[in-house]
Length: 439
Image 1: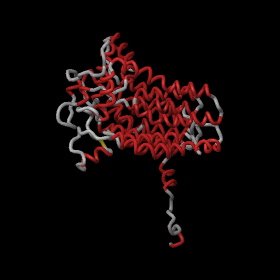
Image 2: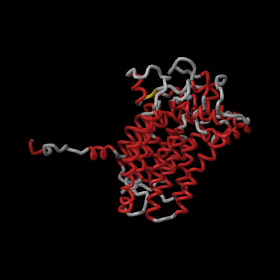
Image 3: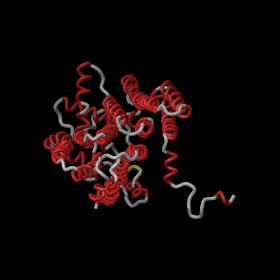
Image 4: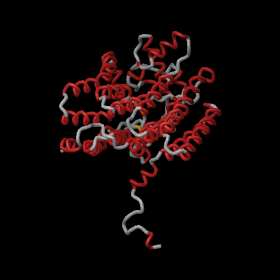
């Protein structure tokens, strides 16, 4: 009937309403959990049929609980946290236990390189400017470009990624046990899970964040293979949890650790600095602001400077030039971003070519920082903090030399966290003061 139609020019439901209807615990668990168990069944030869079966039954039972039981969100939150531990940590533990028996299966080459770098540190040797061609890492397949894997001549990871594994390796060596760096990644996964549980938001919102991060193949697939994204992601979540509870100095220290683990965390720093500026304007506390800045810088300075001083050319070549295209055997143009488009459209002849991707990143990043920064200043909420960080990370990685699948997964995961994180303020100052600061 004509009377049932919406007025001309007005949609039946706005995009915001559609997003709100899709942003609920059942939808998050059904979609992301469904993809997770599908992947577990696909990889059952590696992680075991029993784990896929138990995870499937758990997801179905939890979906039933969401439908049948009203309220009881503490129970549901605990249940999804256990599910996250099962589907994120479970397959990782299976891979760790089975590796000495069956050897390498789906492990990432970076996992082997980090383990080898840890052994070199324990033996008093350098880790940058090293030729890894005569190590087990060289036996892993590489088909993106002709010739050998360029990572055999470069360690792109920041020092803290290696340093954090040293005590674990020293302990296993003393006990005569095999070492797998994924035990370190499991620790970070559990830390991230606890950080989400500590967020001062409604339990149903935490339910969705846990589903997005830990009950989803977007992050866990790469955790199982030994990629390190969970490290910086978990510490960023910890920093946000501390920030939302008013622990500014501790949050700054945590974010500094995230930066020292992976440079992607640097893109969250502008929003921390904006919050420091808001605090300064609202309640001048110069000591707290100064301590926060010092805490932010502590981990990157303490972990990076010694290695930079020890061998400046090697460190700069491995960590910076290798990833930016500044050396002949730099990481190739690849992935799902702007660089791959240029290659497929034949604007770039070879994946090894050097282009000024840094300029493209800067041109994309500046307007995103300005727009999201102003929005954050108008209302410094947890959701807007995450929105600003996620969009800045998207702009930076999409226009980078390579936009790998795990980078895509991290960006999508962070975007999925925005609405569940909600509108809780990170700063107690009145909104009017934040607006005046923005002006």
